[in-house]
Image (cartoon, rainbow, N blue to C red; front, side, top):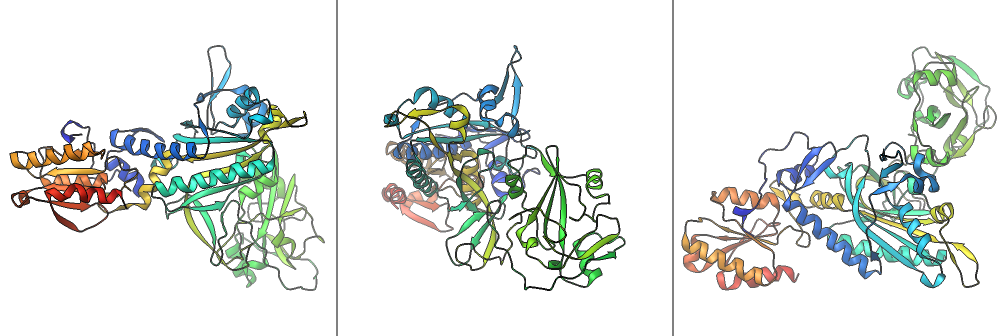
Length: 565
């Protein structure tokens, strides 16, 4: 391909809207262009990289025994109503009606569709196990699209679904997908970590995420400093800190005028944040829910939503709702006399002695409160893990890092097959629900994650496996017939060997060409300049600062060496 005939969209300046490296570089390198908030058009260079990732995914899925097909992106409401998710999925779902007022959505995910196919086509255990996948565009009306394609409203996903006759079969299917995912990300040049995860709206008994450690990741990932344990913050269990036993003391109501926050209370009482239990008020659908955690802890809202059975709408209560529940202003909520529909008590609070809570009376707190004596509620783990907490596997300290989710695998079980009547006849002639698994990879997000892990100040550094082109040939002076003859000869030779090459035959200064080559991240650059008088060209790897001077006769072999590493 000749760059003089290509749509080159590189930018010298960093777009103001772009906050992270992958977003900046995908725009600057001309990989994509924004059309609306969270919606992007992929330009020729970007599409080539995207297709390379898709090809790797497709090859590994096929190798694992999965079959590709393509479902519609326009889905009827009836399927989602059968599964019970038409309302549960929430405002992220794009809903619409046709001219006959029949309801549809733009598919945010495809569990219902695959289950519908399975119930219509799978009749006997002899057809199992079965694994189907597709690579297709999904649509989610994100409240806050950000970071380019990291969180967008339209994105390409590979989603696969396995169907088995029993849990043992599901385990085998799940493990096959786990190995396929590891292979996919290694081939894409990504360093990933598989972590325990929350199943969220997808449901099911277990799930794991493939995370790319990155400071710009939107997820907190909990790692053990001693063993292989890792989990998403939403899922990570927090080992409670058990305090020393104390003799129970009498309640004491204390006036605390204008003292609301934990920081202010610590100063006022001249004690530690661990002596307080804060009560936070939420609205969950039509219910008022109160959650208690220790004063130095933060509520894990995912754990709370799971404990509630999956609320559709969940948010912090406004001042009016807080007053309704506590008869006090914000900052003075407590469990004694609380008018909430549900009270969730973190297990750390349930084990505390003589702690301080809000009095449900503006300007007052109560000291020496104890769970079981003054109040009761549903006890569980409702807090975030913090650095230094103990690992649930080995007991050593945990640490926390940011991560980007690029893949997610779920053990769905019978969540969808039961609600939608997807069954098969087993060996004994009995009807049994299909056991399902679900496996997703964000193609766009994987592309962005590759850039996050592979870039420098000059631009993208594509791994060879997913680079839009493998080699760029740069003739320094296109008006020099000898340089162009050598450049064209190398271009034809490399192309004939199946190597993807572009030749920068634009009438631009060499410095401009070098900057564009670095920005676009082409793995190998061959510069044809004055040294051809000595039958030599310059060879440079994008990931290296070194420039090699190589004879024209040896340059093709040098390029081939990179493919053999």
